[in-house]
Image (cartoon, rainbow, N blue to C red; front, side, top):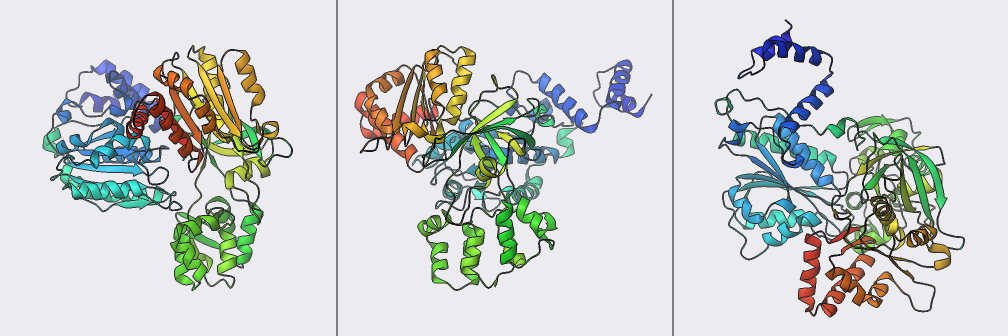
Length: 608
């Protein structure tokens, strides 16, 4: 009898006879460690089949009845980063033997916090200081006058954001301050994370685990002979992700805009292995791109380096050329680096860039890191080693998926706009790679970023209104392909806009074919510069306001994708006006009505 068999026989409260133990031991000997983890997750998940995956816990009845404190992990996430950090904390806390539970902020109310003793909250900031969609109701409740007294609650906030925005990490800051106002005490100070959030969030998790372990870890006497096993998502063993990206071959690179267009929009098709890359309409593809070699050479020239000098950037120690190519963000200038530079160099214009959000944004539209350094530090006062501590890591670029995997099983399609090169000849990082530098047959590293806040209605009879000017139409190509494959009976209405009909009507033949097939029931287009006065998608919405209201009353779902700064705000204002006019509601009530549509997932946005 081998050791595995003996171990199982001696296991407390064992209900398996020796013959069964021997058979199990024989199977276990043939499995590697990852397969054993998968098996434990499968068995635990099978025994809890009636619970949703996100709510399954590894506690036995004895642990569930245990009255020790739990760590409650909350998250609000727009693109999935906040959720991934929260789940990582949950996994590590469980491995440390801590009692934990995890909730999206969409699934918990502020009043429920009264019954909690210790919470951590991972929250992203969306757009210009806005709470992510799944945190919208929670955020509103928190700031009401009748918000509960939270004295006795301990907490810590991890805020995710982008320092290039004026209201950097604003949602996290607001929630942190409000919890404190309501009587809750910080167990750890808030940490604000920029787009390269992994190092800071990882340190926050380590600090949290140290601080809460003694507070909530149950004693051996409490748990008796209970052993907890982690439930592992079985997909993580076979599906690519951020830490294990998939190398997709470029199959097609086709320019969609015609000659004479002010835009350069491309249709990109990538080959994938469907066992490694799985997606749904509404999801995005994250592209992991290397920097342009020409831009790297210009930086090496500025710093007077050969490229073979070995230095350290974050956790990577490599020659400087490899670091600049693979790891360091050089296409986008970060505000923290500008502030660092302004502290080292006396220059009025540089001070203005560091302190004025408008000046910073205007400068960064046309410039990259090498331009900043050549302009304000031509004498190389700040050497490369000093600069590295203040530069950001490259972050993946997200693109809405423009295909349905129900139809294109082994492909993923993207619709990418290659902005015109700046005066200095710069393109965007991933768009420059896919649309300019890369050739058909080349490979690019990708993974899927799920978007559970931008999904087709579960009921195929539900009518949908799709509003997507420019490349914002990409996910709606996937939506309509999926609806066709489902043979969904719900009606589909598309609003599309771009500058010119002749050169910028993206996927025109496909829309016309879908119309002929009865899949696309209505299509309204706005070509803003084909007449003396500009016409946008919001103008087309106004023209069809009565019909739109009838669709809304008929339980239609509304989807909006594209530019967040101008288009999305104008469209949302138009929707409020339509609801007010045809629903006979005041402006305030119409705004509340639209907010209700958002909360019930009848109005979903994917804006950037």
